[in-house]
Length: 120
Image 1 (cartoon, helix red, strand yellow):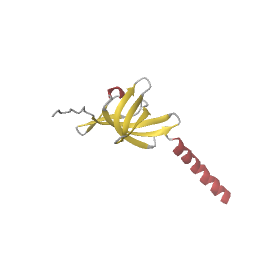
Image 2: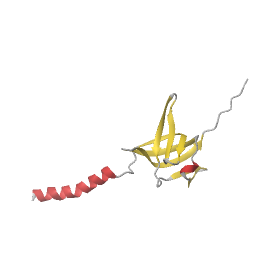
Image 3: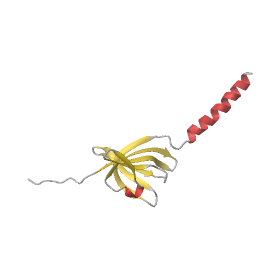
Image 4: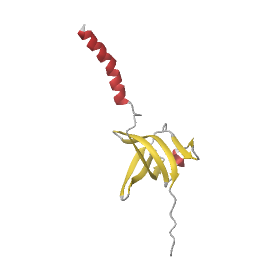
């Protein structure tokens, strides 16, 4: 009887454990920064992020099914990868895979403006 209970429990938990390991849309991390480059051919985006002088560039693959939105005026309108430009400030939720980082969602939250220096 005990063996049947253990086998029943194992047969129930095994698919759940396998599905949890293979599910590609489990968020791993997030990054917010400025778009450095968009490569349409490779469907990737490079984001410069960091604090102070500690900057890093994160390269993310962007599958065609990834939702990309623009948050302007409080609305979240869908946009295309080709509409992201260097200097756009984005927030990306992503995960790691053997092939590298893969974006799950991208949201454009603003745009970096060039500062104007004043001379005395």
